[in-house]
Image (cartoon, rainbow, N blue to C red; front, side, top):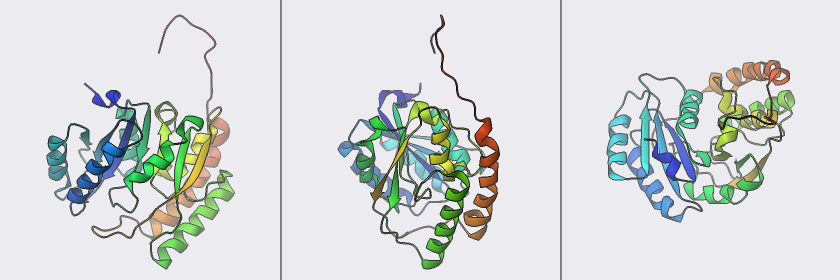
Length: 245
């Protein structure tokens, strides 16, 4: 039984080798859920961690009725983990947050406030707490992506996002797609998004999984894949029929 259908909002959290963050992350999320704007649960996606993250996830989910997890047999990457979370979420809305706790779960309430009017509401790291080098890489990547996709998005690297689950399930998913969520939402008939400033914090435990290649070179190549896909994206609306979905 997929119990995420009992909630209005599922928070998807991909986890890859975050053993040092798991205990604190569980505390943060347990503190947030009673304060959530709508009834909410958490779905962890273990991306084939080779540390003790999975063991700690099992313990967290055994201690909370509103914590759930799935685990990959081997590492498949952030986009695959996000896709799996989308595939398994059955709530009205779903959200996305990284396990590094550089964003605040409480800020989901800011995004949920406007989600009825948009397909997606996403955060912007207004006062980003990363190194100059990391910020410069992101600025270059975001500028190139905007030029190629014309999505107008300020900060697609901010992991704090809320989407209508039915819109999320229509996304054409591929490796690297997590950087293109605004552009992919705009491909949908009537797809819209809104940006809102959210808090950002320095990483205090664990290590970043990103480096020059997957922050710059990979996204550059993905932009060309998006340009190829854009005129080929399929939209349709059912006029009538005698079967329900």
